[in-house]
Length: 156
Image (tube, rainbow, N blue to C red; front, side, top):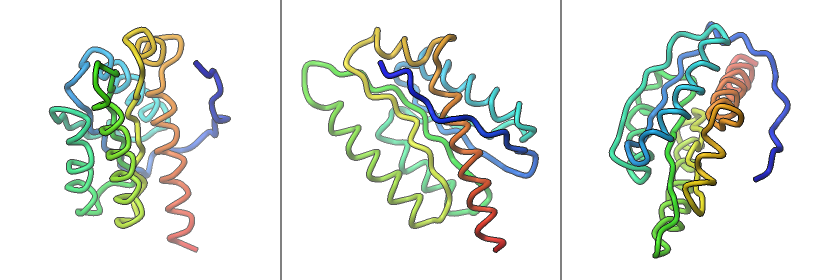
């Protein structure tokens, strides 16, 4: 696992509204990512994020599109964990959701953060959603940074 992560910017999140949409598949791992993302958002001064749950990672783009169309949120984080099985279904979910979330973000002009971990096995998922390393923090930091970026360029 890469231990690389972007440098952290201190962001005053007090003016941002952020939504977190999370899959119920691999729920314990997803819950850990959501917990760390929400803690990071709240530590920035932002209000407690709106949290919505959907059945699986494949449903995240539709849910994000539903929230994005209202223009209420400054950023949306989609969180899921997809673990490879005996077929290539995980690759289909990874590719299709990544494309859909990126397309949505550009079309609606709202940052939609792809927080879907796609891993080969349970151990890899646990390594990325634990207490020592938790990608949920990075997803939240990306949402805050992109909300700040968007606000800067909307007002300039």
